Length: 225
Image (cartoon, rainbow, N blue to C red; front, side, top):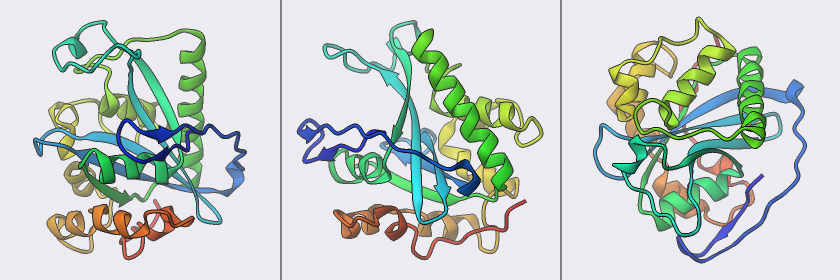
């Protein structure tokens, strides 16, 4: 599990940890959407929630070599390998809120424990397969959002529709999940979205060892179904 201590986007202390997670204690999975420009485009991540305020975030990204930088144009071609990053939330959220100046939104979903376990195993299976047989990132057909959808469908085929334009325009994933009843619907989506913006609380929590719990304070949680 990646648990870097970030001091800037390029200055950090790398730390990789061996962790054990008890799937019998896996309770849910949250959706994170990260914006850096257009409201139509976001980076989608999933965070698994275990009993005892344990969280494990997973980000599907391009695997760039040291000499490479990301190019949106090259992202449509076989330029970058795909990578599953399993990370501590303090790592994967702070680098975005503190140093990349990106906007992070965190939504509780109503995924059931059984579906969350199946989804976790799907992520683990795909990550292990990539270790043996690398695959290519494609900005249109195999990106962070389309792979989240593919993993959801593989773990529970009835849970989500096939890829469509709303999923390709990943910035609207939160609104689509709300409309499909996957998020808390006891308030208008605009209000839920505003309350799910965690940048300010992430800065306040900063070095809190209970960072993941701190950024969830006050977030509405839907009933599992």
